[in-house]
Image 1 (tube, rainbow, N blue to C red):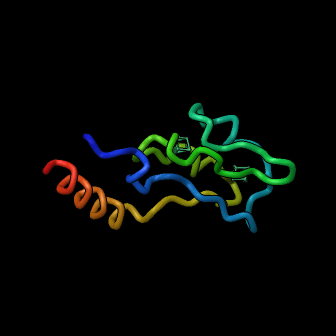
Image 2 (cartoon, helix red, strand yellow; image 1 turned 90 degrees about the horizontal axis):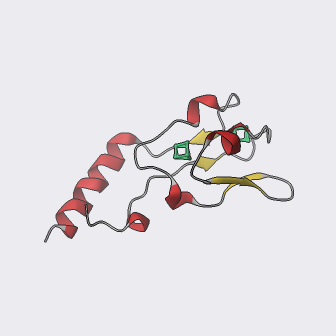
Length: 86
Ligand code: SF4
Ligand code: SF4
């Protein structure tokens, strides 16, 4: 695909109200998507996330990690494919 990664809206977000800063997501993700700043675990490199991966989501016991709705995401991806295959 010729779609720039930054155009593809696939990456996790953290509900900071649920996150307990356990560090599991930081340790698990090999792509450096997460990091701990002074006080809080944050998504620091969203576009390093592998498109379609949700590996870290189930490991987050408080359920603080969210991904886009898959149906909406697939529709958007289809639009991007049409746009970039012209
Ligand atoms: S695994 Fe979940 S609770 Fe733990 S630091 Fe990551 S987002 Fe926060
Ligand atoms: S979904 Fe996969 S690539 Fe994306 S942040 Fe989680 S473990 Fe890393």
